Image (cartoon, rainbow, N blue to C red):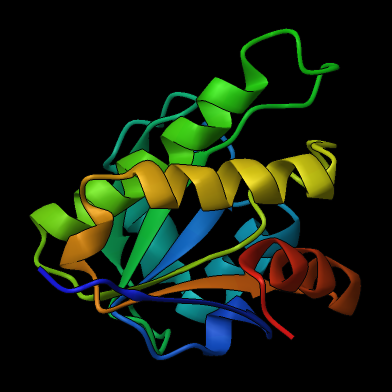
Length: 170
């Protein structure tokens, strides 16, 4: 298998035309604030209906739905940990979000995926630490080689700068 293109960009994840975008969801999967709310608004009411049928999601796990009105074909919903100082398995649980999302994408034959900065919003995970966990988890995933493209989609320029530095980019 080929090595995927791994990049970071600043954008609204709901505008990306990839096979799947990842939703930083809460455990109910029924919508919320931040990335989760934006994805639900743009995908339309069909998304919340599809999520109701999934019965929620555990921290570190992920589940997939169609993208409905989004440019992305699918949404992979994952529940990141709330930051509690880093001594409550947060890095392990966050890494599981990335690896599980990649596993689902690979199992569904998807070739491109975009991740938001999981757990860094209201869940309070420091972006510098979260970005390192994200990159390490993608690098370690046995499912990453099945992808053509893996994108870290950052909402802010400050977050993008952190990812670019860690990825060795400009």
